[in-house]
Structure formats: structure tokens, C-alpha cells
Length: 94
Image (cartoon, rainbow, N blue to C red; front, side, top):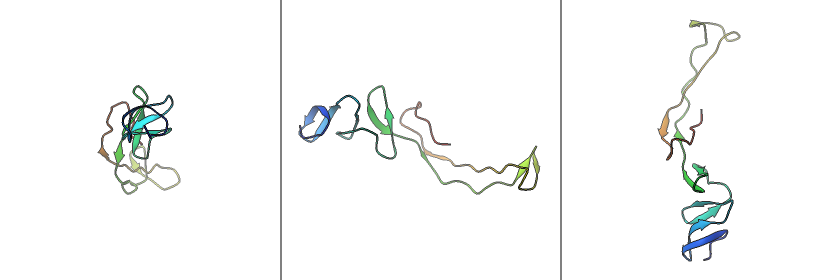
């Protein structure tokens, strides 16, 4: 097997089990999962993480359900989940 940090290979270029402390992802072994993927500790694999859209515009300043000045109120904004994570235990960013 030519894959670095691999314990067991399917072929010379595809790892099926990584060494302790490494996560399996698309036949390779990583210390940390690549961007857009989340570490699933139970099986030491990188799975698709949560994908969120762009932030909305800032809402109107309000306090106690009333519009107010910028110093004493709260402005909020939101973003939608575009793609849910592969497993429910993986949190989406807020």
C-alpha cells in the first residue's frame, strides 16, 4: 500500500483502514478532515458536514418587540441550511 498512515489497503492507492489518530476520507488518511467534512469519531471517517447559505441582511433594531435606536437594541440575521449533515450528531454552524 502506498497510502501514508494506512493500516489496511483495498488496493495500492486506496486505504480502507487508517492508523490510530487518522480519519479515513476517499481512500486517504488525514489527521484532520478536509474543509466541508466533519470527523465521525465512532468510525474515524470524514463525512459530509453541514452546508449553510449566505447570511441575510441585518434586521431592524428592536428591543422588547419595539423598534429602537442602535445603542439599546438588538439586530439579527439568519442563514438557511443548504445541505443537512450526513449524521444528525454533526452540528451546523449558527
